[in-house]
Length: 101
Image 1 (cartoon, rainbow, N blue to C red):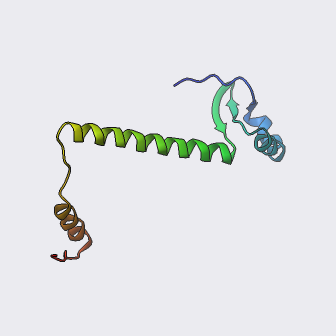
Image 2 (spheres, helix red, strand yellow):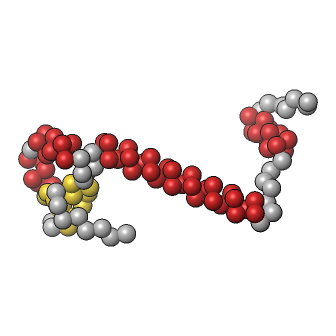
Image 3 (cartoon, rainbow, N blue to C red):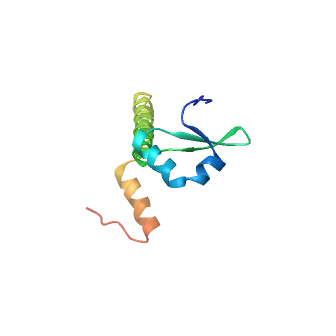
């Protein structure tokens, strides 16, 4: 993915000269700032709230993908691992024995 971000671009040197001011502006604006080095994009600074939102959305997307894969597998006849087998393996890994019901 190659996104062109042409606003809020600073050189590393500019950012280093007044880190506090640029950090405050980053938080106030609520959007990413691209840092450049030798005229090339080198890093992206993202406000914490924006990062948390991206991380949450990425996690939700991963869960959606896993759910769709599970539904497709079930539709194809895959019924997964029987509970007894799963718990036997889980307890073996944990060094415990299963209780027979």
